[in-house]
Length: 339
Ligand code: RAM
Image 1 (tube, protein in one colour):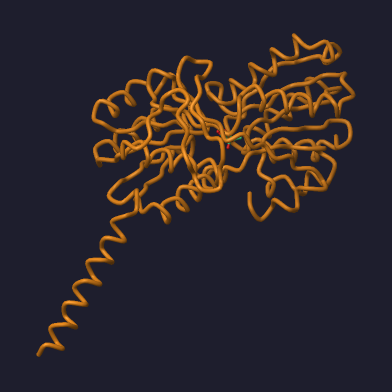
Image 2 (cartoon, rainbow, N blue to C red):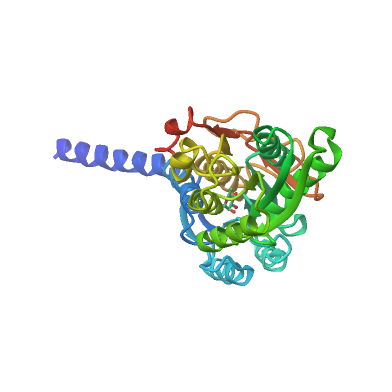
């Protein structure tokens, strides 16, 4: 009998130790609602896999969604739904920085932590914005790369995502500023921006119209992963490989054949999996009250160093990962299984 009692006690002890062990995960009981610009975008699917990796380590639940049409209204509906479902953290990549401020502030009034990641919500509607690198660094990197390819002269245009896209518009503002301010770009004739709305067919069509209108065009900057392969395909279909070069922010897997085919000397991207992973860690720490988004605050995330909250140009707070990887004919193959 004593023996049976001892076994039962040992089992009870083991079970309670096991439950203590599971309860120790920082994200237990928390739910994160992830909102991205549009459904079906491989860049955001990669971002979500970063959240999934963090969820395995931290134990939180998560949901993710984006509108089919890249609209602000669609994002607002998803956010309202997540608020009704009682999420603890919202992580939003916005189609319009100002458009989500009101609904985000409704969420914050209910105690929900509101983070933007990838594309910001304006400062007055968020707790913190998490970005891969400074907008200036991302913009100027693309300009310098294409200008070098063009021999610093000739016609240059940008094929962007949506007209209100907060991240693309910031990068473009720094590209335009640098074109004016830096003497080395004096012979680059800047033609302006067309918008492919992060849609493959539209990006292809606006590129074709641009090439028809400016037959001597030499350079295209495409700061969107959805636009990149569409623009590259158009350059190929138009028989312009060698005459027109592009750069931009692309997934390696989408662009490898074009980069190796001579359409681009280099494109760039951070790792969206890492961006999702870090955003999740920040969200959990903030929801637990263990980390406050305040200037100078630092956070420990496995595999990352120097993650610090700093003031951003829009008067809010921002945190950078600071990693931008070039994809060239030599390096792109090493990335295609990752991104
Ligand atoms: C698209 C989206 C996203 C942007 C990348 C580079 O997938 O517009 O917001 O960061 O491209």
